[in-house]
Length: 252
Image 1 (cartoon, rainbow, N blue to C red):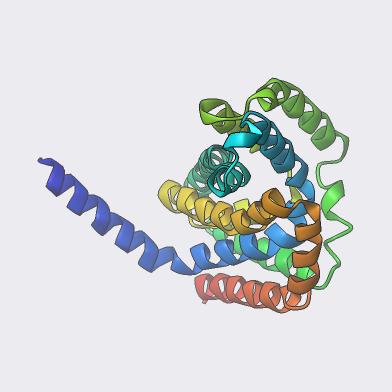
Image 2: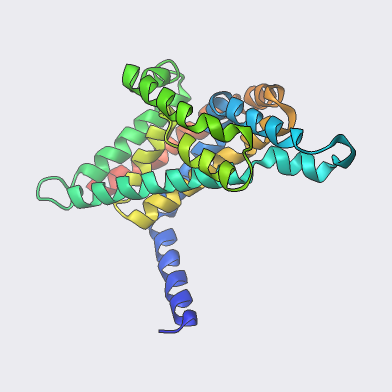
């Protein structure tokens, strides 16, 4: 089989996946866009700002340009690293859910995952989940976060290229309440490819808010949070409704 045939088959497979799980991908992209402003900008913002400062300090003032400022704020290797970790988590979760859901008597697993995600986003929209998010995982989550942060700390000194990518891979394993809901949606697909693509959509959704933080600091994050906060509940409610409808369709 030649390269063109492989490419053709790959594109056909992607088209089938998008047609089948497009609703999941859209829900995850939207969750990333809204959650990126209301949650990720505060939680991941310090990591982004630390990288931006370290990257820009390496550029002499005489050579500083708008391109250097924008590329420094984008921290693309870091986002590619996060995307790699999240895609891996989504693929593993979806594979496990797919195999478990195929067992006799456990076909309801995808329905349960979608229902959990729908309730999660409903709680996020109504603010009832906000106070609960930091407590997910308890002391175990905090212990794990401290260990991951400690391992990743040496990479902050020069977070460019592969070091920036490695930083994103490592920090992608830090527990995050919003991430749990996204993984539940990805796992509901039951397909490794759909789970990975869904989590990549989630990562893409979080990038604009983190780019704003990198460019203008936490002030931008607070400004965006105030603006998006007015429409975020409605968007999350729509997300919850779509996921709930998808769960119902699996039952009906």
